[in-house]
Length: 381
Ligand code: CTP
Ligand code: MG
Picture 1 (cartoon, rainbow, N blue to C red):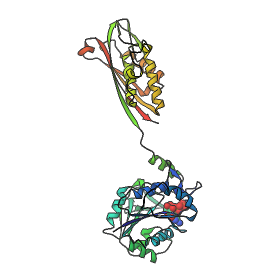
Picture 2: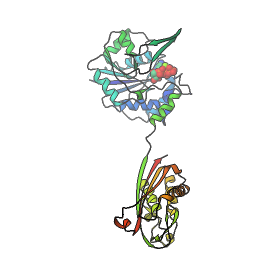
Picture 3: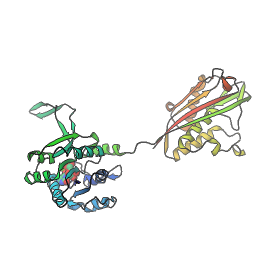
Picture 4: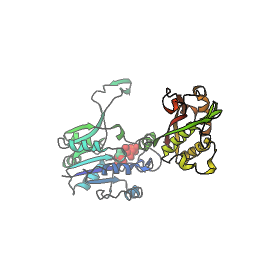
């Protein structure tokens, strides 16, 4: 028992416009025909794929075939002036192989899934033919002499591949007319048993110019989204102010540390390095090197933002939590968001700064120091 697939690609793509026939135009960088070819070859139950192309398109086709190394791919056959003629040409080419089942697929449907192929092959154990279909959900009207409602119950939109027991469809085509809309029409006219199976919206046919945009969106890789976490603690020492998120707040102590000891900005900077999996502040700016002694923490944050840009990311959002018993952070939170926005170039509505006390518990509760945590989420551009 064997399964063959025919990929009809001999059309001219008149409705799609745009120079070369639509099946050879790229969607997210890969030609549509290459995508539909690979969708068929991805199914291990398919033993042979017969492409049907226009005699003028060999150069386009050969470029794609050279990239597809799969010995199930047959040499292309030439199609005719109608889709039905193109299908017939492929069936004739297949007669020497005599597969048990054949799937006839439009090259213009690049998003065919393995699940749809599974359902079709399986249905052919019980029926002569099967095709993927989607029930019509919209209200339907026929515009004639006025508008006439069309009962949509039981109406189906047919997709491809349309699948058949090989001998039956060959016989049906022999009897059928070359102008039939599709192979299901040919099969039904010849009295074959045909069943719909569940189709998929994604398996749509690229037909009009605007369909390319939709296809590009569907084929685009999912965005690379990364989240990093940062945590830092600095102890108090005698002094008169603390600097948090770049804002100086009068206090009866200061934070001890190499630089300005901006514990909150350090946590945020480490969150960014974390999202990039690029270590932490200590690795980029070793405290052992005198150069960084007393450096403003904004220097570290600017560096981390430089890495974000260099690695091709943008910031989705920052969230910073300062854990301190005193001084009160709330009145300064807006100024902190503004300062972080100035340093990073990220808009304020993507930057959150909030604070909590530690309920007098632990080192924060005893006012021995301040802790800060931050989360940074980056999106690949
Ligand atoms: N097809 C074919 N031979 C034809 C006509 C169509 O192999 N003589 C193929 C197309 O290449 C396409 C599929 O049948 O993969 C579905 O047809 P359609 O979407 O109508 O494509 P085109 O005929 O190329 O487009 P248009 O009708 O807009 O010219
Ligand atoms: Mg057509």
